[in-house]
Image (cartoon, rainbow, N blue to C red; front, side):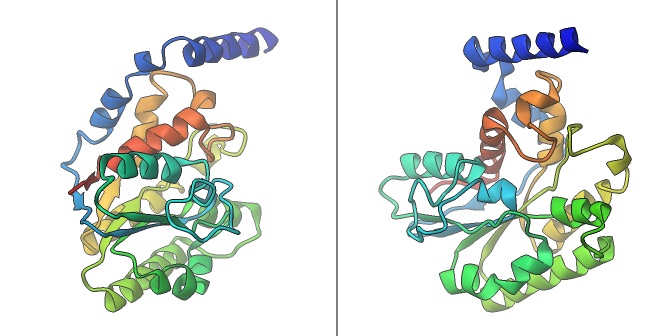
Length: 254
C-alpha cells in the first residue's frame, strides 16, 4: 500500500510540475460533450451572472465581500476560474459576476435563501450546481429527503425563478462523484438518479446542461481520481479548472 501511495504521489507531482498540457483539457471537454450538442447560453453586454450551489461553488469564498467581480468573493473554485476568463475576454462588456454558493447546502436550503441570494440580485444568467449533499447527507442519516424531494424542490426553485424572470438564462450543472475517501462503490447506482434529475430539469427549463460526471469520467482516464479531487466530491486545483472549462463550453460571449 505504501509503495502504491508513493507511486501515485510521484505521478501526481510529475504531472503537476511537468506537463499539465499533456492532460489535454480541451480533449477531455470535447469527449465529455460528444454525446450531445450542448445548448449555448449567450452572455449579453451588461449581464449579471450568478453562481449558486453548495461547497463546490462556494469554494471558501469571502462572504464579507458582496462586490461583483471580487477575487475573494468568487472563491477559489470553478466559478473563480470561469469568471477570470469571462472578464478577461469581455473586458469592455460591463459584465458582473457573483458567487453565492454556500457549503453544505441542499436544494431546500437554496430555496430558504433564494430571495436574498438570487432573485434580489436580478441575474440575467443563473448557474446552479446542487445535488451531491442531497444524496450524501441522506446516506449519513442527517437528512431525510429522497430523490423525489430533490426533484420536486429543484423544479419548484427553477419555476419560481422563471416566474420572476421569464427571460433568465439558466445553466444547470450535473452533480458528480468520483471514487474517494467520501465516495464508495455503494453510492452507485442510487447517486446516478440525481444526475438524471438535473439533466431532465435542464431540458424542461431549456437550460444549458454541463455533464460534469462525464467530464470527470474522461479526466480519470488521464490522471487518477486523487489528482482531480481529494475526497471524490470537492475538486482540487486541476479539477476546479477543468470544471470551469466545461462551464465555459456552455456559454458564448458577446
